[in-house]
Amino acid sequence: MKQILALMAAALLLAACGTAAADQSTTEPHGDDARVAVGAPISVGAALASDGSAPVLVSGYLFVLEDATILLADAILESYPPQPGGATIVVEGFSVEGMAGLKQAPSDSGLAQTQWTDAPVEILGTVVGGVLVYYDSPNA
Image (tube, helix red, strand yellow):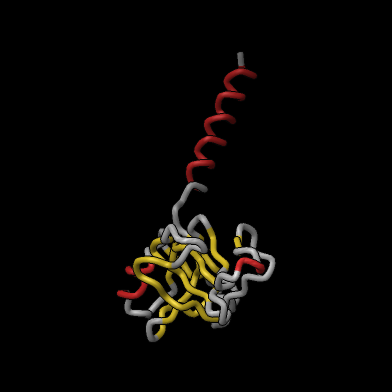
């Protein structure tokens, strides 16, 4: 009987630990031991309306245009290749090299060589002058 009670207590303790890990915020290292706390992801439109005083986690469809400009968009248009729709923001300092899920029209199609994601991605950055500057440096 004591073993069953001990197992039940351990199970309750583990369950309680699991709920704390379900926090909807994201953190990024900053400085020695400090961390930058960022709440739930926001839309591109909300990012453009932010004051830029703190990093934000922006969710949107990622596009890499033919001139290598990287954009996040609130919507993806159903053209081929897909085009950004809704509010858009240029992303600086972010690399798509090795990124999983990035699609591209066939190079022999004669279409613009746009790359895109079918699902929204989240990018942490600071909005400066209407541009999302990727927050990749803990000392930034």
